[in-house]
Structure formats: structure tokens, C-alpha cells
Length: 215
Image 1 (cartoon, rainbow, N blue to C red):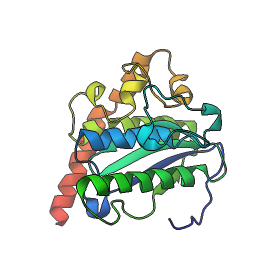
Image 2 (tube, one colour; image 1 turned 60 degrees about the vertical axis):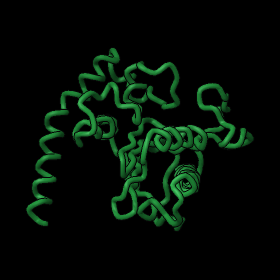
Image 3 (spheres, rainbow, N blue to C red; image 1 turned 180 degrees about the vertical axis):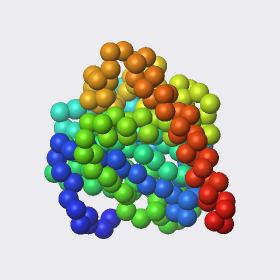
Image 4 (tube, rainbow, N blue to C red; image 1 turned 120 degrees about the vertical axis):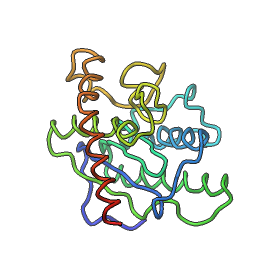
């Protein structure tokens, strides 16, 4: 992976995202989504641990004191992904996303009998510069499946951290405190997210309409 011109800073939050080469799918079924989420959890922590092939996310204990990043929230879509990350260790995000991308690419190519990269070059990252931006990003990331038309019920969308935020999953791995501590209840956070759903869907419709005109 090419070196970054702008270093990523410890204790700062970043919106990290990437998509498939030529906008092609990077997930082709439940097994792919599950593998990516498993890999997300695995590479947060450095040091001795079982091989990824033997790692069981629901039962294997990891040393969370050895995190190189914290995953605040995430969303996986058919041809791209969004992560909200906090860097804990020097170079942690670059190491984490590099390991994640390389490992998942090897898995995907083996499973689907293909060769070559599946992601569009180096990952993109945007520094979060305010608490307002942090909250907005968590909402934006969690709204992705709804505003893009992949689901009509965010609660049931399995491939994002949104169900974890609502307490619908028995276990999880996201560091949600920085977001949820700003709301009195989980329902207040849900309301915060869904209050922008209609606006987000309108923007998505306008974006695709304009793209159709340009084509």
C-alpha cells in the first residue's frame, strides 16, 4: 500500500472508506459480509492471537488493551464500506486498514476464483474536526442502507453497527460511548438518526437523477 502524504494522528477520529474497483461489488452474499465483519474485529488488536481462520468472533477473547484502532461504527454496502475510526497507536489506521483490505482481498479472490485487487486503490480518510461532525458521520454511516434503497428497516440491516447501537445484538465490538453518551436513551439516538432519513433519501434521489442526466 502506498505511503500517505498526511499522517494520521493518535486520538483523532477519521471517516475511512473505499469501494470496489470500477464500482464493482465487493460483497456477493452473506458469507462475504460475515467474513469482512470478522476481519474488522480481528485486526483491531495486535499481538498474539489465533489465526484468522480459527478466530471465532462470538467466543474468542481478544486483549482489548492492545487495540491499534477503535471502531466507532461501520456500514458495509454491496460495492463499498464506511468506517468511523479512532487511531490509538502510531500508524494504527494505516496498519489496520491495510491488514483488513489485504486479508479480505485474499479471501474474496480465493472464494470467487479471481485474481487482482478488488478495492479502488488506497483507502480514503477524512479527519473529524468537531463533535457535531462526529455525530453527523455516525448518522450518515448508519443511514447508508436506507437512503440507498437497500432496506426499508434499518433495525434489520445486519451489515452495519446500527443494530449494535440499538442494543439488538448480544455482543459487539464497536466503541460506542463517544456517541451514545451524548443521548439519554438508545431510542433518542434512533430518533436522531431517523430524523434525517427523508432528507437523505431526497439527496440520494437528486444525485442519481443528475447522474442520469449527465450520462
